[in-house]
Length: 410
Image 1 (cartoon, helix red, strand yellow):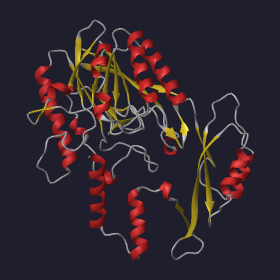
Image 2 (cartoon, rainbow, N blue to C red; image 1 turned 120 degrees about the vertical axis):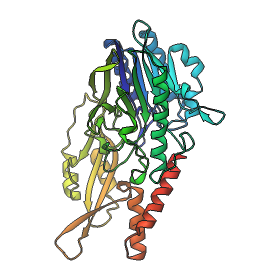
Image 3 (cartoon, rainbow, N blue to C red; image 1 turned 90 degrees about the horizontal axis):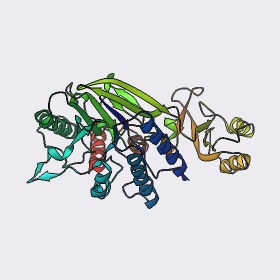
Image 4 (cartoon, helix red, strand yellow; image 1 turned 45 degrees about the vertical axis):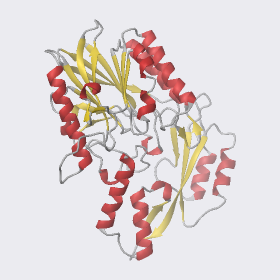
């Protein structure tokens, strides 16, 4: 039997609207270290986006390496398998590997090639149980950029088909290597078709139109569990119990305010996943919205802020203020800041929604959000329509989406 813990999307070093989150990340890592020991975990899988940026601060890197040293010291047989995400620098993440391997840690950031061909052996990691026996083989695949995956002749999405082909070839290689009773586990940092993402405030850097999405069929039944990263909402993919996103331990935007955070514990025995369990984690700092639901008029919002009472013994929550306006209010921020002075809260942002009469009806009303609430495609469409008084042609939409896909994958 082997116990695996699946986590992802730590985003160490992230600042939240300018506020440092070191204390929040340390709180999560302390909790995670306790979970590893309490549950006698054999393997910890981190499915990408260890850091928030490709050039993380020295403090963020120290936090990561101290955690590895701590958990491998406290749990002498614990293995770590880490893959790079799209936020990580693949080469930077792999650079200290010779030292980390001494602490039973494998990091896969770069897809290595020999004579122009993918080295599939490099993407396989043996997973050992408490007795030191190899009980599973892990297909440890980092976030794939252009040139990392096989070129596939297709009329469809070349990225999705290329990623699917890489997993197919790696699976074929693993099936030849495994022995009776060994399970196959896959790791990936990608957008799986059918996964649920936030409707706004995308913090996962999803490519417009889902052009990077990969079919769950890339993970056939021979793979007993697939540990995914990239999407911040913990979920099963297409209803399949054994293909999961662990989700991020901290909310990365206000759109993720109601997400349930945590890790996934997977128990394998005799080549099968006999138990898959979500272990819940409560972030140190909560997110608060005023009003709690839809935006309201300035007077209503200011009155609610004046009556805001918060427990003094909890870490100061992050606050977003949502206001419905008919025209710009230059003094609004100053009024909000004056009311909040002395209150145990961190003002993250003020979001303005503007009233706009719907065509053909003076009484009906729609709300137009500011730029911070719009994705790039919405912005370019609005600009085109404002300039030419016509809808943006489908051909231009497709070209824009393709340009975004190229920028994000290179």
